[in-house]
Image (cartoon, rainbow, N blue to C red; front, top):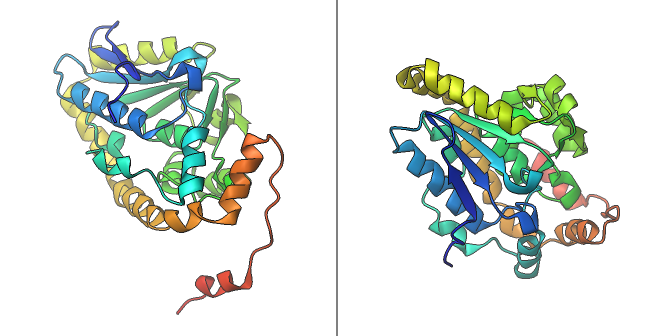
Length: 273
């Protein structure tokens, strides 16, 4: 599939900075394989641009990303497998952690599921106070995908990660700041993020920024990689399950899910050998 040319828009309005906007406003920037490919390519291009020292990531139309596109989820439910196009993406799913330039996320509107994971893969996060955030996975009968477990633990600690993953509750930008999920709140998160990125570009040595980012990420990189790979290995079984079909149906029908009880055959997997 050929990527839509403007599915991601890159602008350079401030000295030393670039802004990457997820640009699927008709779908509220819902995540798809082509969007991931275009976003990661944009980051790769900016890594190679010597004039760019700091990167801002945001969503067009006042929404960051509400999670995976429901049309894609329906296809996964129908086929019982993930999109084979994922194999065409050259970068790993945790690629933003490997970018040697600071990435600042400007978050507004909805930030859920894979959208929240993408925000957590950034180095700094600024959210509007009324931003709505959720991990979402438990309500869709999905495992914590995209490295969400270690990414949340890295940002907010194990207790907050357990709360937000197990309840899949929606919380606002103000609570996200209290928990440590974001670094700051502002009614205009994009303007605040641009100011911060411009300040980093103007006053901080790129070599130092790259070294600092590497050292901050290094203790977590293996955890994120292992988590992504182990979860991905289970996805075909999950996507073909009745629980996932019910989780998706409840989302599309805007009703609470009706999941059956846990079956006994699950329990031996929890015992130590």
